[in-house]
Image (tube, rainbow, N blue to C red; front, side, top):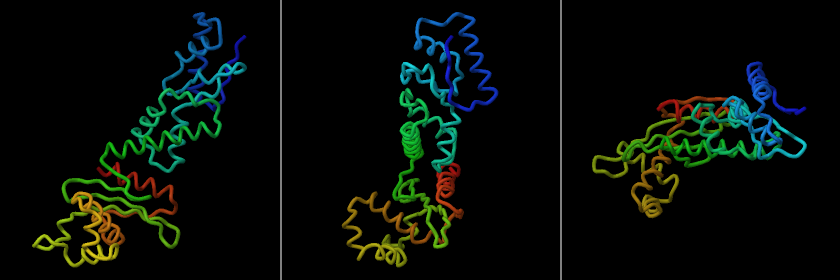
Length: 247
């Protein structure tokens, strides 16, 4: 008799599919001569939303936990990121052969969480966003025009998430020079306009940094959209909403 050990709380539907797989193997005689052969046969009948990892089996275990998409969904939600099909699918893709997955030890969850982080960064780049600070994101829409999103912790412990579009031309005089408000903001970060421009001689990089300064200095009272929440994880979800669901 062969025992299949499943360390996972299955739904009724998933349990039925697993039992159907076991019964199919028994009826068709796909027992093979060893544990690996049996497990490969078992995997061939397992639904696509479950992950079986035979490379990690040991001599005394035929099958450890069967991982499902629900496990990855839960990890994404606990990470603070907004759960989307794009992030879920990219995470699973980044996990590749999933060989590190076995029986829910801490290092396996570290592997899953690392894959989530990598997937998130890939999706950011795919949508044209870059992370410019711990909780600030920027996207260049066209020459001299930038979209920014930022989360800020408030004195009362809440978090406000702001988003706005910065048009560099709107901060210049008719002669193309920085206007008084723009000069004042630059000087609040740097000692002088000359120091700022010397630090960023490349025009594109200089404009990006200027957009960040203008946004940071004005977002609390001049934003296209603002949302306040009571913890950091919720703030990340709002950031994701502004990044990906407002496009």
